[in-house]
Length: 483
Image 1: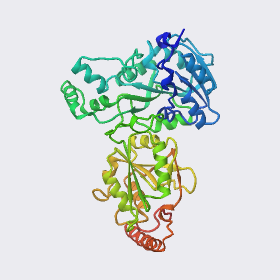
Image 2: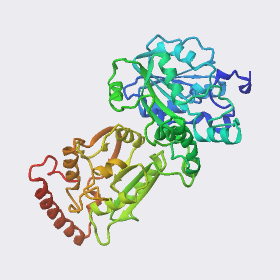
Image 3: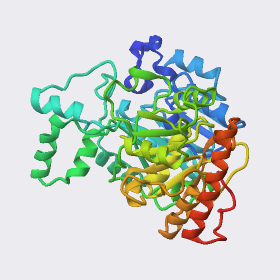
Image 4: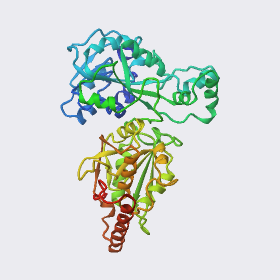
């Protein structure tokens, strides 16, 4: 039987192997697999790229794939520990004991099946206690489907996308929740791929729904959600693994709530083909620098470009001539930010793979400020201000003055400890997110060889110390350690 003659459920990818449909590495799914998972089942594994990426990140991890297309399964066998060539609509078990897998991945799978619940019922006994399902499921309520249906009477199948001609099951978030309930499952984390503001011309869609009893913001969010990303566990199960316990603490999401504006994560694409011109940024990255043409800034920006998989903008503020310190350029960059989230990043920081999603999850669960783990060099676990993330709401809520997130009275030093003290007083201290990692060249941003600049910095640091102690007193935790 050729790939074009496969039964509907035998594979979950398009049959044109040449378009690299089988090759997606899906960082937005990988980051949701618990760090302590030792055995993973990738359902609809394609050519095994996702599993191979997981194995490269986590030495010793065992990945078993299920795939219906022979060519893809053959390729996956060169990358994964085991691959079973199966019809997912007909499978009735696995050649593995119950409780074998710590995580199961369903990346764009369930919508291709005649009976998704049947497959889940067959596979769930093989999920270990405390294990999770990691799923991506397209949202048929997206405006690009609803608008043509209502206005043009069109429901046109395409070669890819929400109305992919191989989709035989369609989901909304409510229908996903119903399916999980019937299976005794619950979503403990929900994210969204490709969620952007609803185009203004389509506001009447929301108005009509509100007139019929819908809630406005929720309706707009669900019309804008292209694809849902879910982490799922058995309902009420007491997690027996540290990673799952951590997962439960990281989110307050429930199956009927859409987190605000997550972004698309497709590391296989770069540039305009992934985020067309005009795509609103999810994230604004503010980089103050003493040398906007220097190699250090170039390395910082290159790492951000290579390892940031959501719509973003970078605001570089050159504060070297004359020197303005740290606070003024950071506040100026934050005032210019258009993203829902902002990250302040020293120019001697290099982000590592998967750095952004864990920080976003921390902000979405209500943290005012979140900061990554520094993979090498000294590390402040109370607040490492050389790279930190903040939500738009927290920028306004914790500003010293309108448009001044950092205290302008502290020019070069102590502004991080001042912010730490203010956040502690508000009951929302900065959150260290160990799943996110960066490298940092400690104090390289002020290690100038210019004697005049070094003299100015030394004087300003002493002025900042006096200003800080006048406000907070002496002996403040962390005040003796500068960034």
